[in-house]
Image 1 (cartoon, rainbow, N blue to C red):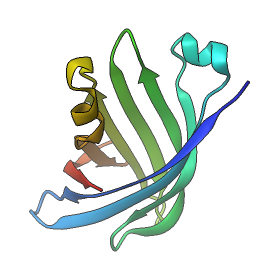
Image 2 (image 1 turned 30 degrees about the horizontal axis):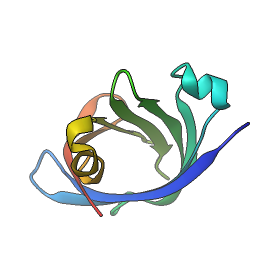
Image 3 (image 1 turned 90 degrees about the vertical axis):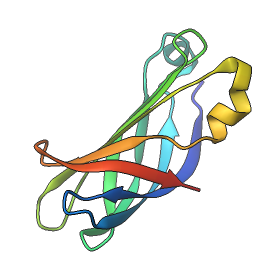
Image 4 (image 1 turned 180 degrees about the vertical axis):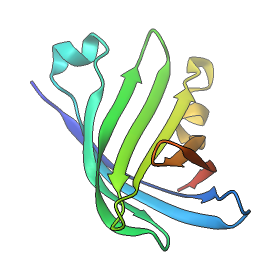
Length: 128
């Protein structure tokens, strides 16, 4: 049995020069099966990514690790290629606290974004 869910993440990332770039990911996360999910295998992620002045609705792929209930981690690792050929990677992790579950799940996910695996664009600031 497979299952999936869709979501949109929006936010901004601070560039090394202090300017802000806005990003948006519209993704579908698919479990590889109920047994795989229970064993902690990551979800496969696909969708589109936009990053201001760089890319508009580029194809994005990657994984989402949902390590619940034991490790209490949500970790995104997404990549997309801009029209100029540059590869961008978005990484974000959230540590889930069961005693404050709703607050944890509704809180911002602190991400980071890099270009071509070398230059860090800066820490991201997601928003709803």
